[in-house]
Every structure is written in C-alpha cells, then in structure tokens.
Length: 182
Ligand SMILES: [Zn+2]
Image 1 (cartoon, rainbow, N blue to C red):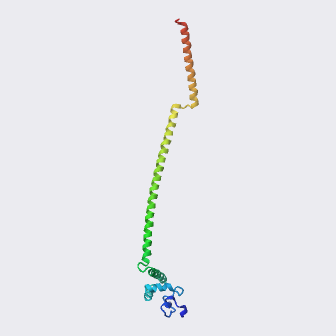
Image 2 (cartoon, helix red, strand yellow):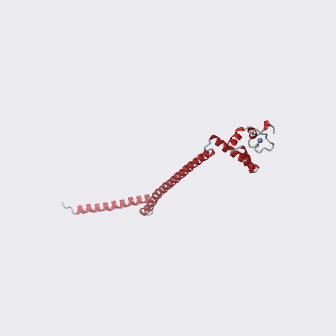
Image 3 (cartoon, rainbow, N blue to C red):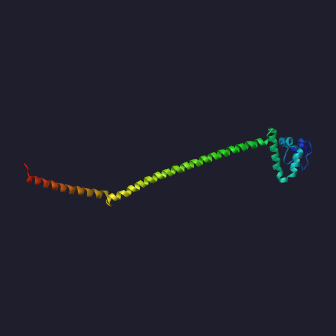
C-alpha cells in the first residue's frame, strides 16, 4: 500500500502499510484521532495483539470498544469510561426508585378508588334496599287496591258515616221534640 493510502495506524507509526494490515480495516486514514487515542492508551503492539487473538468477525467490535475506552480515558485520565458507567448506574438507580415510587402511588390510588367505589355501591345498595322495602310496604296497606279505589272507598265510608250521623241527629231532634224539657 502506498504512503497516500496508509491506514491511520501505519501513518502515525510512520511505517509501510501492508495489504493485509491488521489495523487498516478498523483505523482508516480519514480518522487519525481514533488511532491516536487508542495508541496513547493501549499502545499499537497491544492493540495488534488483542485483535490477532480474536476471530475476524469480532475485531470491528473490539476496535470500536477499545476506541471508546481510549477516548474516554484521554478525556478523563482518572475515571475514563468508568465515570460514564457510574453515572448511568446512578441514573438507572434513580429511575428505578422513581418507578417504584410511582408504582406504589398507583397501587395506593387504585386501592383508594376501589374503596370509594365499594362505599358508593354500599350507599346505592342501601338506598335501593330502602326503596324496595317501601315498595313492599305499599301493597300491604293498599291491600291490592289502587289509590283511586281507596279514595272511592273512603268517600263511600264518609257518606255512610254522614248518613248514620245524620240519622242520629234526626233521631235526637225528634227525641228532643218529644221530650221537650221546657
Ligand atoms: Zn496499516
């Protein structure tokens, strides 16, 4: 491979880039920073050794992971990518806590709603029961008669009473006439 088409690794290491360069596919010349970071942290020989140990189909993933780790290590020499992992774990714990809190709130409000529904049903049930009881009472005093029939019966009874009373009054008047004390 000519100097102009050397991979980023070979270009940085100032060496000839062979046709079967193991680093070439994963560190292209258009992204020199990627190999620069990896080389700074792991060293070119270590990267080459790690890639050689792996099956060809897994080398791209390994190169991506080494690149990610190296870039984070360059940014943060103390924690590197661990800072991001810890940050994500902290966020995950906070979200899980929030989720548990929300779930318990949902459970509480569901229970409260169920209790309110039960109380409403009990009130409705007692009201319905009271109405049914009053429905049962009505026929006992209506005695199978309609209100209109009862009214007619009451009028007839009043009429009879008037007749009787009237009769009594007439009898009393005639008695008075017959036994006039004065
Ligand atoms: Zn190369």
